[in-house]
Image (cartoon, rainbow, N blue to C red; front, side):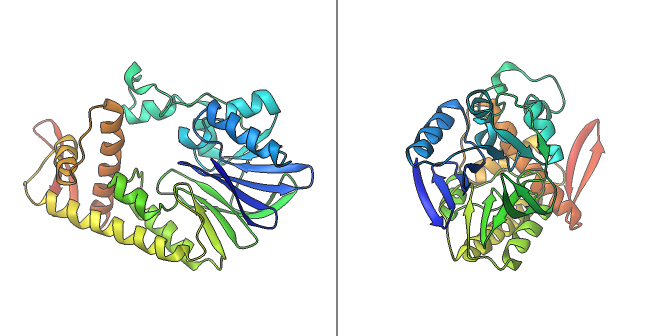
Length: 297
């Protein structure tokens, strides 16, 4: 973990999952917390060494790698926590993520792990789009859904703490099929990022970039490539189940998984791409022989 100064009072803690930070005199705003209490402890120690206080936490979305450390911060530093309405519901009831991944069924223990279900924590304030002041720090909040359901991001003085609205190219190459819940909204969010007059952006996974637009364009191209490949895979069969398509697409992308949790995450992403194709009238969901099937058009 490395504390990187962006400009003036703005920083970020660079690690596998970035944590943003903005200082305002005796107050300080943390943007996301990392995955667990160990990460939170490291961040707290590093910030304390630099004389940077933390009084508030802005959580961009309810994935454990972004909010899993919040409960530790609340217990040890009595911080105020801010999140959007739907993300708040999951942050406060984190079992909801394994529930929805397990199709609404009470989830098996295999998927109730720290990667999918972080410690619950109460959110003090709900945030909405527009100008808002948190910890005495005025910023513009944008909702950039796609990777998550709302995903508010914090913008200040030309710097966008962009969370997982886009990914570093190295991250895309590593994971090949990024986790998504809505591809059309993800692409709209990427277009919104391109429209911003910003000096630079910090993604949730990657490094701060002044020319972040190039990486955003790469994300758009990545999604389009996956949509094209998904459409091609669909046309290999007259109909197929989402599980069969997930397996075929994992094999096509040379992804090997051995854990149920990973299969469910990839399955959700595959379904998000299929939903986008259905919205483009290139695929259709049908019920046939008591099966839920996907039909290419």
